[in-house]
Image (cartoon, rainbow, N blue to C red; front, top):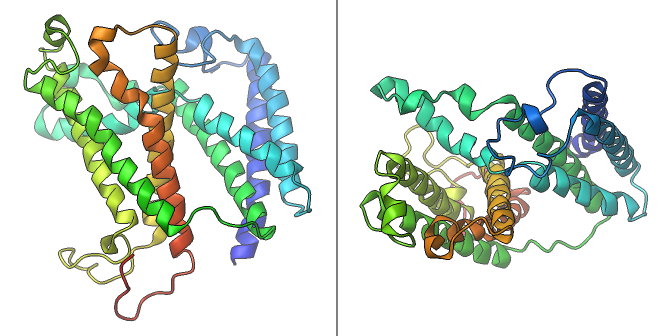
Length: 331
């Protein structure tokens, strides 16, 4: 079953690449829906690295899709050559980390709030899910999906080549500590602003958000801190066996993918958002006396990378687990 599934991964990646390449050709020929440039609701064209492109860029997308499809198909052949993974990993990184921008993280973070807002009668300034997930942002999800399919194919190829695993339990524990600590720096600034404390900013900056903006920031800070604490489950017993306080699940084995999928996705969107802030910092968009508004975010790529490493280590440790008859030994 595992071998059959791993054999299908390259073909799934190739199918995605051909479909997206065809979409790019369609945009170049005048089809609507080009997700960057003038049709992207990015107010100052500073979020996406492709903000300056036009629909004619669709031909480059078509060529990129063809190269990606050929690379993915080569991964299915299981040769001893290192060329397929050598090409696959940069392509996957481009799709997962470079094409998306920070709006992907904002959409994920605000979705729970937007879903419960009607229940409590919160207006949220009229913001809806459609505002959080316009087509240009949904397109980023499509690109991330393609990158993940190709990365999964490359991982299966590496396993077939019996390469040594770098992702050990010890490295996983260290990565978890980093993934828990880094978001707390960001959270501290946003909680301080919500309480009227100008941590890392001047009084004028703080006054600009007194209309409720900092309460939204405190929500994001709490969201991030809670996620950081959940990362502990990648090395703790409750990340393998449901704890006693969960009726109906207590004592049962936690399915590995239940932790791997959300943690892996969060590691991507955090890294992408951090890279956006790093780009802006290098471009000189921020003031030094307002470091609290941008410096913590510049560490998010470290957070995302640490979370990704911890997630892979968790998966490596648990992929051969057998369903427990009673209990397991904590890591």
